Image (cartoon, rainbow, N blue to C red; front, side, top):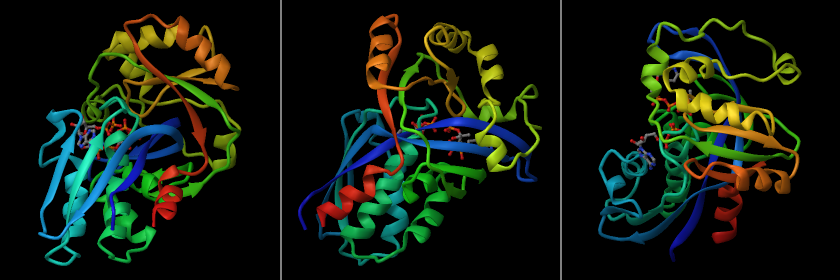
Amino acid sequence: MATLILPAPAKLNLFLHITGRRADGYHNLQTLFQLLDQGDQLQFTPRDDGQIQLRCNLPELETPDNLVLRAAALLKHKAAASAGVDIYLEKQVPMGGGLGGGSSDAATTLAALNQLWGLGLSIKELAELGLTLGADVPVFVEGQTAYAEGVGEHLQPVSLPEKYYLIVTPEVHVSTALVFQHPDLTRDTAPLTLAQLLNSDWKNDCEALVKQLYPEVALVLDWLIEYAPSRMTGTGASVFAEFPDEFSARQTLHKLPSQWRAFVAKGVAQSPLWTELKDAV
Ligand SMILES: C[C@@](CO)(OP(=O)(O)O)[C@H](O)COP(=O)(O)OP(=O)(O)OC[C@H]1O[C@@H](n2ccc(N)nc2=O)[C@H](O)[C@@H]1O
Ligand SMILES: Nc1ncnc2c1ncn2[C@@H]1O[C@H](COP(=O)(O)OP(=O)(O)O)[C@@H](O)[C@H]1O
């Protein structure tokens, strides 16, 4: 089979409620994952010597703990000894910014190698494997904009109006673990039904704390809110402003102070991953 070239879309958390802390220290969430039409790209070229190699446009990501290699290792256990692959990762999504790039790369790798190595695993089985790599992997495997509970594994597809987002990533590194450990984190939001959530004002329970710990995030949000409804995604540091059309999103992008890295993306109901994988085989 020839090289497979596949997308790994980014996501936003349109709302993120923290409803409690589990015995193992992880937090239960109610969150709305919005998939985007922008993301990373991966290329998979099969090889028959059992080797798995990763190259990346950012060489510092060519390490064994890259989620792409960890995803490949999970499937290698189930594949023939000769099954190998050369993977090239074109990284575009800002890292550690709450946009899910690493998790999406892992999901695309699971889907691609399942196909290339003829493993025949179902989407559900791939999502379960993905959850062992990170809480955000299942939504990218299942490939639909969805409401999630638990740590992100109980997924229910949701149909939303088509919106455009201006996504800004300040130059600060927010540690997800630090945010979840912090005593001031809001972690007792009352659970709501999905209908109540969809009809309420959307918020992110990590936002107040992250703004306080990282004033640059507060600066970006204060700037964006003058133009459109704006919030933080995940545990930050990226924030997004929501627009009804691409033109208004791009107009605001042009006004943005040049020190902030930003891009415009469209919210999509379906991940381009599965459609492109079907077209490729
Ligand atoms: C909260 C979200 C929302 O999308 O944030 P972002 O990572 O996207 O910013 C994700 O679910 C994050 O998932 P992920 O990034 O995979 O988190 P992990 O690496 O599994 O967790 C890092 C650390 O955060 C804490 N953690 C994470 C998720 C969760 N629901 N409760 C937690 O308490 C744990 O202490 C864990 O050790
Ligand atoms: N393929 C990958 N792409 C990006 N980051 C990765 C990847 N594999 C492992 N990582 C590690 O995961 C961390 C968080 O990645 P990312 O998914 O971009 O952010 P977030 O979880 O905030 O959405 C990075 O800082 C990096 O150390």
